[in-house]
Length: 147
Image 1: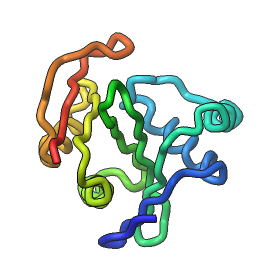
Image 2 (image 1 turned 135 degrees about the horizontal axis):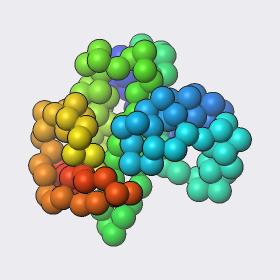
Image 3 (image 1 turned 90 degrees about the vertical axis):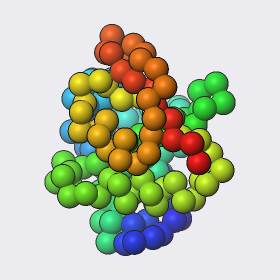
């Protein structure tokens, strides 16, 4: 349970699946997997994958979640924020809070080339473009933040 600047971050549990499902489906147009999933599908996914996802709260209210996974020794991260909290400059502080608690890692992510808003956020956070990749048929950038 991490706290800073009115933000808290905690490991996602089964009790968070309905919030996760709602946010994930509202963000799918920005994700590499554009499918929407039912609550039951999300419950099954969580049960079988036991993902390392983290709920982000701001001033006591859940605003989104971090996705994390390892791929070939690289620590990948992504943040999805509920629609009503987007555009309020919360992503930068949420990422900074998350980074402070994983200080010895380099962070990697993939961003759709057409998602200029997310790309601008990552540049602002200090991420650097490594290479162009194709993910689910979408031209994307792999980016890294060295810490």
